[in-house]
Image (cartoon, rainbow, N blue to C red):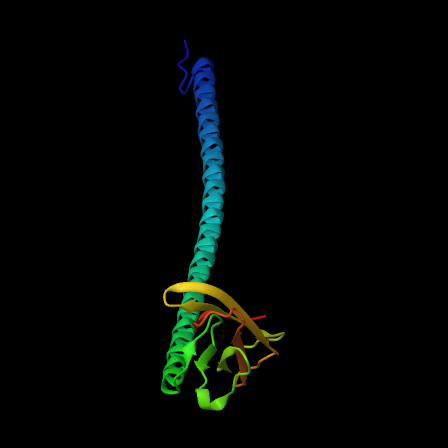
Length: 190
């Protein structure tokens, strides 16, 4: 018999099938690896998008916080300025002998008896000074008439409109017939 060198057909077929199986396994592995890589890239893109969105939202929150802090600082500065102006106004009023009335910026002072005369009834005059109040329609003044510690009546008067820096005067009269003093209960802008 003649000796054959090389592979038998059967061995050759077996090796060929093994090579084909190995090649298809490598191809399947490459396909699976490629699919896994594509999924990982998609997940990475989604994560980057979520990160960008989160960073934008954070930047918006930080900007809103800065705006709120600036608004709060401006409000505090305005309140401080208003408080200083009120202190200055009250110091000026005290220096002039004025007493705060019901409406902010409105002050009163009883007139000396030498500045007015009364008719048949007891009366008192009251100066009204607006340092910073605007009374577009009128100023309403009301006072109890007090005899000793007993309220025996009341009286009222009105003054036309009054602007900041303006001064007016009203006359309060006691029509009750009881002797008494005037005790202011209301001074307001209308």
